[in-house]
Amino acid sequence: MAEAAHVVCRSGHLPGEPAETCPDCRRVRRKEHPDVMVAAPESSRRVNPPPFEETSGSKETTIPTALVRALAADASRHPYESPRRAIILLDVDRTEPAAYSALLKVLEEPPSRARFLLTATRPRLLPSTILSRVALHTVPALSRAATAAALRTRGLSVEEADARAAFFPADAEEAAGLNLSEEREVRDRILAAVSGLFLSRSVSWALALAAVLAEGDGDDAAQRLGLLAVLLRDAATATGDPAGAAVIHRERLADLARLGASGPRELLDAAERALTLAADFDGPRLNVRLACEEFALGILGEMPVLLGR
Ligand SMILES: [Zn+2]
Image 1: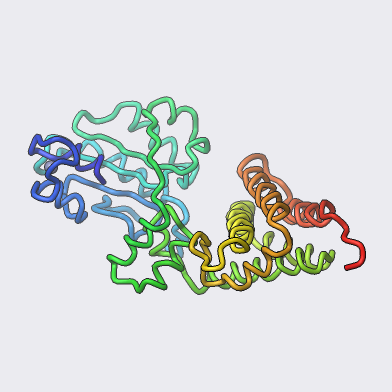
Image 2: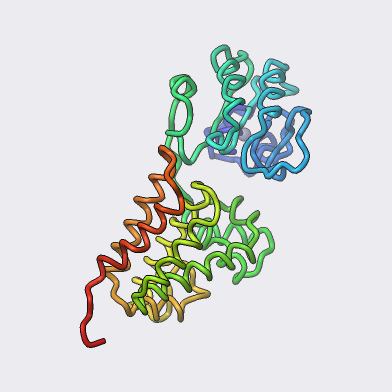
């Protein structure tokens, strides 16, 4: 939004300088500026979108093709009051593939009075034709504390803000919008299964963990493996951190400390392997279930056999 403010601001002040007093910048921050348009997968994050026909039952996991087409048709419209319009597409790596050609067309011949700002956490998923027409900038991630603080300013309690920020440490929007009870339920099942695996070292717990990880498609599995990696690191941290100050999922501190007692080095190794596998699901399609089983059994295979236990 700071970039968007820079595009539409008419005051001529230095970027970030007196944004408190500048009426243009203030309206951008409040999402009230008529020359700032935001498209996003979730309808709640959109600002001034052009009219389009949204199919009913949209899961809001991708930016609808109809929205991108409407936006491309609307892009040459003149700004209301600023010299230029800011047209923002959030999470453009979550665009329906059919929408890329509409987007490419407008990026190839951008209207003179519009600037496009695209965000993506996984820019490598964008077609090279689009990547070759944009300037890439890396934006530093928010810290978990900053995300929790941002959630508290929306009126959430300290506990709820903390719990939500644990799932999306760098994204207050995602953290605010997530279904907390669902996320907790999945997390607790992953934690129970991985604890069973490390504490009992049995094949049945390895298969139970694989089953939880592989419940959805490759994207879901990648997300759950990411969550598993966070939990494994948390467990490794919890052993030397009885207050849990550095533990992300602090509400499960006791269970994490119990898991941590099984050996921080093995837990960190498993976390690395989970992230490696998660990255594989972005590439050529794997059989999700088999890959998760191989991963979970692999952890078991590489554990030292402790005789006499
Ligand atoms: Zn300004």
